[in-house]
Image (cartoon, rainbow, N blue to C red; front, side, top):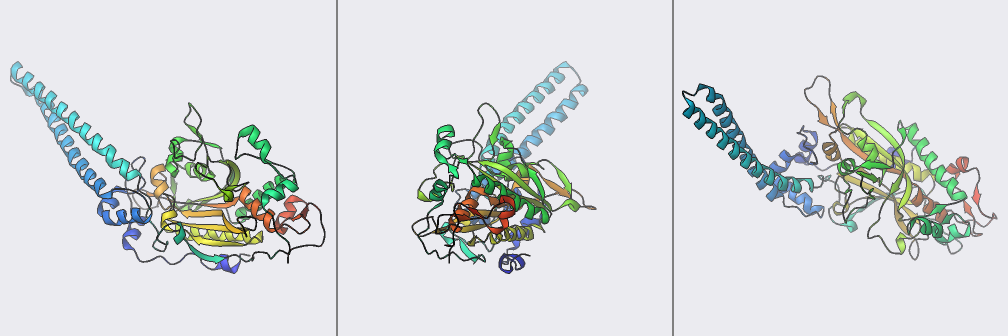
Length: 467
């Protein structure tokens, strides 16, 4: 049974009244490749969209986009007028009275087509700049999301388990891993470079146990378990909202191929339905993907990033859902509820954060992070992120062209997509090792994982436990 704090009660604050966003979320709109926000909505709500960019710390000139789009539409009308005139002249050639008139009409037709081609070049030039701005716009932001940078993120609640009061000086997971021969960072560095590692002995069993624990729980909730590809094409990665190549990318790309190592199963699960139309009766579609995740972690440094916390490869169980617009907020609530259930089951102390607008990724309409207490992090223990879950509304679906049809209605609508971490094995392992360490140096296995691991403890056993 789910815990009362993060289970039966709704963890989402009520949305503030914002009719313009409600209208946006429900309206139908025309798909154009690589566009994530409806251009009609942007044109009709320039100030709102510009303020949303300010709230999210995104540099974008929405007024310039509106100006360019107005130009593009006017130029496109001129193209259509010239094309119509050229067609009319072409049809009239056969009605010419003599050769001179026929040649004159042919010449007029050539001039009109040349003028049309020149005008089309203007349309394309203006369109490139307009689309560049539009592609860079982030999703809209939930009315209840805190506005501001990372520091403005709001703690909503804590989990059922409180941080342990040790009767000894706890050590970090690096010391515990070395003591029990659980992780070989040196070997990983020699073979693959810094940020890679070998799991050994009971760490391997814990890795498998965490995956099975999460997948079993999600299957009980109606998720379809999947093992996903480790590579994806660039267009799928872009469609989800990642930058596949360039100096700012977190993605490893394969030289001379349009293939990239995935940073999360969100990419491959979301891409599974790209270009597809599903029946409304099929929604929601809930998937649980198990995958390796590869990240360059460009710019990551510092003591808090040591060990297993920030690495180039790890395994993760990811939740992903396709829903109707009416279902997506409840689905976000379910994802967060399941994350809480997983870590309450592990008896790991944690807190839930409502992530501020300035710390949201581009696709997220609203995002919650779950941070676990890590006694070995920092001088006296700190919280560290272990899961996140986001409602991306139709932002990703527009770019990937994923739609649903409703019986009895004309046309189709974009689905909403949601993603959430069930368990990122490396960071969950940090929390387990550090919270379950004992005075004799041994480490207890969380009770819910013991059937999978086949033992209760790593290392020596005596009666010296945490208080």
